[in-house]
Picture 1 (cartoon, rainbow, N blue to C red):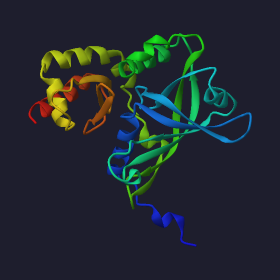
Picture 2 (cartoon, rainbow, N blue to C red; picture 1 turned 180 degrees about the vertical axis):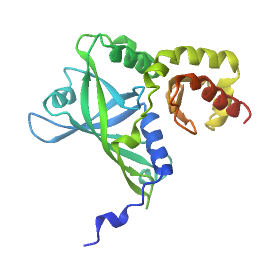
Picture 3 (cartoon, one colour; picture 1 turned 180 degrees about the horizontal axis):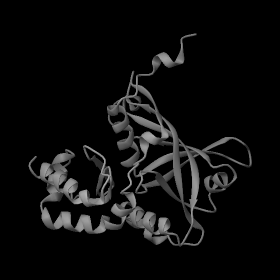
Picture 4 (cartoon, helix red, strand yellow; picture 1 turned 135 degrees about the vertical axis):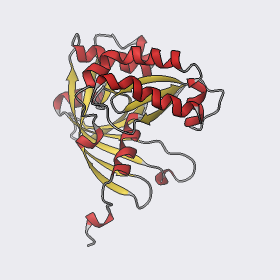
Length: 251
């Protein structure tokens, strides 16, 4: 039997970046859990957001099978990555093995995640505060990246996280950073459309900022723009955002 490891490529920074983008730009994903009633794997579609440290988050009802499953066994597998034209297996996708952690209501983490989640999923405002709904943080443990035929990689959980001492400070300043960005670059929406190779008529806005980059949304589309380097000082966030804004404005 051929050694399974022989099909894997050495994990490099290009693979890590692709994996991060697949995870952070996903509006939804397929979540697989273990059904406590049957022991069988159970897969469902969930809306996705990301916390300030890059950890994916889900908002789920206590009545759902996947919530009951995570309460019984926090292990889960998350699939992200959208197929495009042609063979769906030719397009990149990421499977992330996670441990689910409940986010307590009333905590600072809950408020931060709630704000970030609504920036992506505005319609979730209709039910986000229902008492039976809760957030889970899906802590990455390991991941398998399929970048297309012949491009398979294994990643560690840390490869998908934003490990910066400035996370909390940037989270506190994120809303102001976005306002300053829009004031400084009023043509940002059109520039983002060019950057992401989308129709110029599409209205794009920044829907999330962190120490590794920012997310932009237009209707049902989300795109991720990563910084060249990780921010480790909150004072640097404005200069990094301005640099990105300037580059897309010039495209």
